[in-house]
Length: 295
Image 1 (cartoon, rainbow, N blue to C red):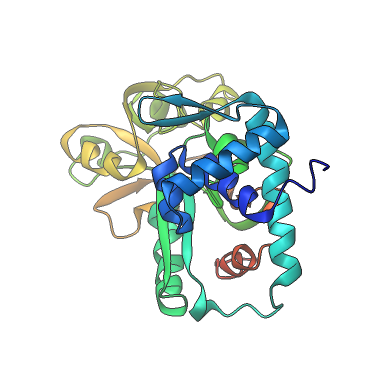
Image 2 (tube, rainbow, N blue to C red):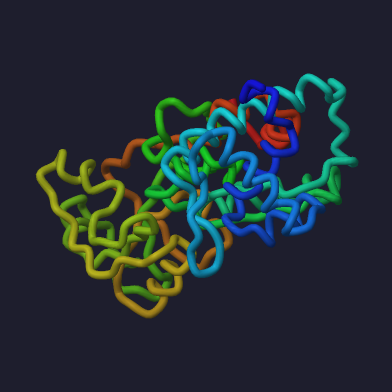
């Protein structure tokens, strides 16, 4: 009997669930099987592929290097099978399961509220997970199917991913309404010298996204506070005599003053991205269609 004859679709679904959960009990619960049945399927998979596939750890399994490589092909195969037998008409109201979005702090404030509102109305049975954007883990998370969609900035996304531009954004210089700086009309050189607060969510440090722009003028910013996210910066401005560069859409409704500059930083794109092998997935395509895209 050939290896193909010894393999069935249920075993591949068990493999996919184990890759996702790294825990036999959780995989069994997700598939509606007993833990013993999952173990039996795993035993057959190990025999077919002549590899352990998963190594036990304290609270579950760790996939072997061969299993991680195999998972790419298995995911694509199962998607192709689903596409083959599924109807071409996607009905949002009947959509079930979990959809995971990795989003920057900015995207969670500006992009996701409207998207979540649409999803709750049109697909009430679909569960949504929103997690903080982790640039160092993004590829692994999207390749393994743990993340379905990323909303971030182009520099953060691998070039091989499918991408759509949502809109353009630009940074503005702001300070607190009662700051002494709010009453000045500063030059760019003075702006560079003011105590500055930045948001550095991906890698905590004292380097901001527009440092290169200041460097074009031979200036280096006086960064004194590095915050983990955009949302806390206005609160820090409120208690310090300092400035910050924040995205224009993120300051609407905030009690801050915008400082007019003789030069303005270049605008930047906000994008949505996904792994290419999920491009034809009906749920994926539908969620993407709900994103507000400005021409």
